[in-house]
Length: 268
Image 1: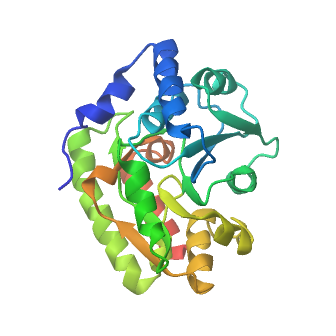
Image 2: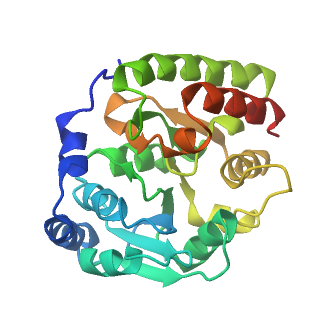
Image 3: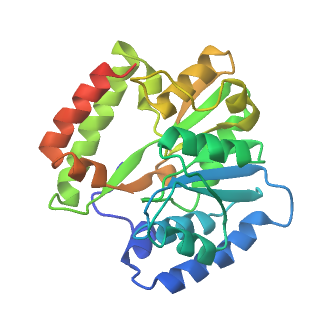
């Protein structure tokens, strides 16, 4: 069951206005994630001009509860704001990618990662405290090549949370339809998915044909290579909360929905 309102666990990160305090929270939590041992999980996050969001995102990841050793790698994709300053204040690892683009950024992070498992994240999302384990645990089963999860929207514009609550159910139904008329791989999003690092490298990383997206194409390559099935994590505790800014940039909910439907129908 989806939540009509934003859960307190998620809202506490979005409500914070003290970036310094949020960064301290992230830095303290990250030390616990590292566990003084080689990482088993690498969380890779591209970031471009994310000074308004990245500290909150990193804090939510660093406060995750897991027994696994975890590294976080932020790929600074040529940011010109305070993104790098905030990354450093949060104490996580970062690399610089001067070539603009999401695919080259994800590839750079994948190449830098050392964990057995890769989790993909975005810098404008809030991750629940059990997200890491819930996304990685199914990958211990070799029948699963990739995990992907569900998400909910955080309003930043004029559209209210109640409207998005109903919109998300409609979108979820359309993703169920996609499994039959298109391919399940089109339902995979880069801010909420995971796979085994060596297998991701073996299929030419995130590189993809023109007209396709890097996240869905990675899922397709892994499955077609015979590494296993795509596994949807349905546990509500793995629900990622992400801002609606892409919908707002598309002109709002109605215009954005039309554009996204067109992209979905044409997506390969």
